Length: 154
Length: 200
Image (cartoon, rainbow over all chains, first blue to last red; front, side, top):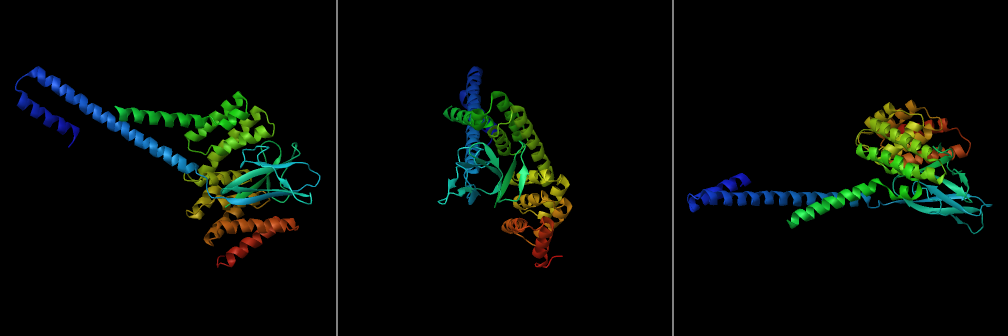
């Protein structure tokens, strides 16, 4: 039953039972109309709430980490004292992904789990020298002057 | 009354979190206020037209890490926003963020939107992020875009998987390390992968 039909039915009922008291009719009908408006707003609010919760849930799902692939970043730099890999998988943070020196002291490496996509990166040697990955023959010019390497993860 | 209040609060919380997301904390903590505002405006524009914002944020962070000026960072982010829009014109409105990033690589390696549109058509609905990224790397080494576009269509017809495209890239990289030329290697690999599957 629609709100309008419900209102008319209640009005008819009230008219038949309350006789000809026009003022009484007006007051009662006013109260009924306010009640209907409240019900509509409550329904609207609840609907919005459900939609907002659904959107928030969907956003959480979209942010959930995708299963990743382990990628090794490695470079031979026996003379270096510190090497990090910096790229768009670690917010270009100089400190977040340090490479570990191998036992013989020549090779630096780190393993990072990456979701599917295309990533740009470079090595930062001793905190001041940028190097594209010499093992990757494909690199692109960065917008900032240095070449960066690319890795594509499935 | 209570239901209305809860509904309004939920809407308010969602709206506030959306606004906070617009002002990325990574930018606020690493860039000066003027650059943050410039990059924020660009990411807002991207969000409004349905383009991914994360590549733009990463481009700004890359600039900060490399000591670029605020103007240069804003210019690099704006250029990337333009290229993401061009990539979407080529790859279609349904392109994923990964496909758009691969499309940007393609555009920056000498290809154009028309090539991307042709790749999108010939893909027949399969994801093109990996194939386009692999081909873009090879464009950067001299593979002509027209030839690469045609080759991608043939490789799609041959049902080459993403792993197959990555393997193709690795084969070429290995050959280049051994002193072979990129073009002869790419052509030989594409022929092997398509002819062996009964394609011309």
